[in-house]
Image 1 (spheres, one colour):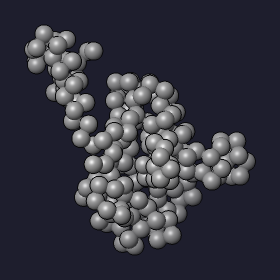
Image 2 (tube, one colour):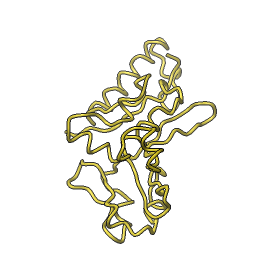
Image 3 (tube, helix red, strand yellow):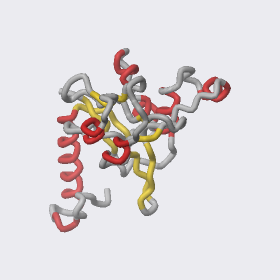
Amino acid sequence: MSKVIMVNVEKCVGCHSCELACALAHTKAGNLAVAIQNGERPGTRIAIEVSGNKPIPLHCHHCEVASCMMVCPSGAIHRKALREPVLVDQEKCIGCHMCVQACPFGMMMISPSGKGVHKCDHCIERLKIGMEPACVIACPTKAVLFVEDSDVSKEKRKHIARCLVLTGGDPSGLTPEGECDE
């Protein structure tokens, strides 16, 4: 069983705390003032995009068949084992940006230096010491969660069940995306 980042878009308020925490987690300093003072430009690996007036946190899905990994000519994009995070080896990255074009979610990001790429790594260094990803810890509304992948479907089923109760069991009260007014 592996864990994935799950987003409850209904809870996101667009505060960008996840983006800041992500960027800081990927600095040498780990502290905003010191990182700025040292001239670090880590870049975020999660992005808040707005659709209509709704903020939506987007992140890498660490795809089982990862397009970014398949197109990488240098082998810089890799994973240690199936169901593990897809990672970028900065030493091997040649900066061709083919992965940026290949990612269907737009989550391969050009590094602030412009020379390489970076992406969500599930804060792998934090995971090694028993901590959750920085974006998860920073989210004040708990819109960003780190859950067992089997729990994702379970949470969706619970949501649909709540919606059906609210609509009196009438599935026509749900949007095609399975949303309702909770």
